[in-house]
Image (cartoon, rainbow, N blue to C red; front, side):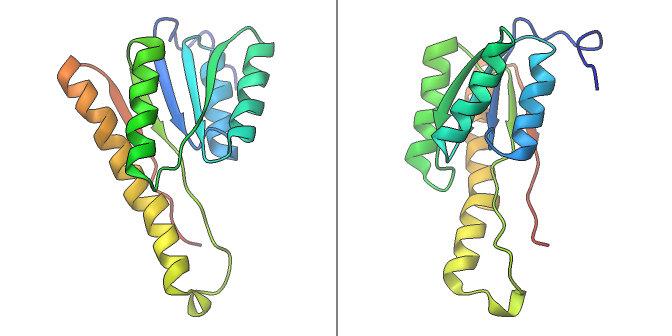
Length: 150
């Protein structure tokens, strides 16, 4: 889909968690058509760099960043670095998530904790940290997608 004529984000800074994954990458591509600066944050710096490179080949500004959303210090560092680099965060697309594909009866406590720490705790605390900044600045949008088990 072509978004370029529908939306203008030239002056916006967009933080995308899970930006190296399938959904995050598609959002990054969509926002690339509309301008703005994208922060591509992912547990896999290599995947974030690949998405960022793809965007830069199209002339877009993006910054690949490693983040572990299950770690509060990593989240705080992500937000702090984004603000230091671009001066603000206007939009959060919270798409970090994982799925362990096996029958529910085979899940271990470790499996369950990992999913909860990334898909629930991580989503919440990234939104909270970005939200603190947005409340202080009295501007911004949080778009949150909660992952689910299949």
